[in-house]
Structure formats: C-alpha cells, structure tokens
Image 1 (cartoon, helix red, strand yellow):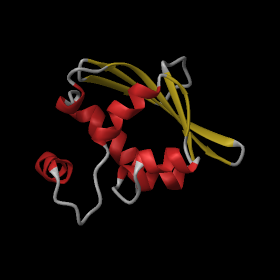
Image 2 (spheres, rainbow, N blue to C red; image 1 turned 90 degrees about the vertical axis):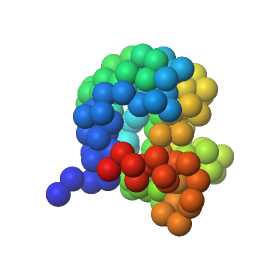
Image 3 (cartoon, rainbow, N blue to C red; image 1 turned 120 degrees about the horizontal axis):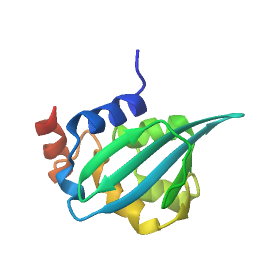
Length: 123
C-alpha cells in the first residue's frame, strides 16, 4: 500500500501539468526526515509543466519535514503555511516557490473552496 505522499507525487507526475503553477518555474526538493533516514522528492516546475524524481540534487528551494506531517499536508489534514509558522517545516532557499506550490495541496475535507473542488475534479 502506498502512503499519501507517494500517491501525491505519483499523481502529479502522471498529470505532467498543473494549471495552478502555470506562472511558476523552479526546483523544489522535499526532504522527509525520519530518524537517520531521509526520503527525497525533487520537483522541477517549468511554467506548470512538472517532472518528479526521487533524487537528492541541488534545488532552488529545499523543504524539510517529518513524513507523517507531509502525509497530512498532501491529504488536507494540515496546512503548509501553518506548519511553517509552527516551525514543523524548514525551508532553505526561495520561500516564494514553496508558497506558490502550497496551492497544490488539498484543503481540509470539509472545505468548500476552489482547492477542494479542483481536487475532486482531478480524481
């Protein structure tokens, strides 16, 4: 069974294009730390066109988080900006890139905003 994070990145990879990122370009690396083990997800964005790999390469923005927290972020159980303000997420590099990418995360299950509608349409 795949975790929420793997499903999230595989779904983005399958889509190949994310309209919410049409004006965004750069590289984001997510480092998910669990003890001594770190899982890396590298996301290259070129005006909404996405390429995803599990690689530890240089990136414009590096985001560090606990894998359970990141599962909550990609499933709508937590908010990336709130987690950043709490200090549960670290960011090195261009913070604006994370703020733009954050729009791709789903909102809470009971929300009725455009993110929830968009996420439902993409399924």
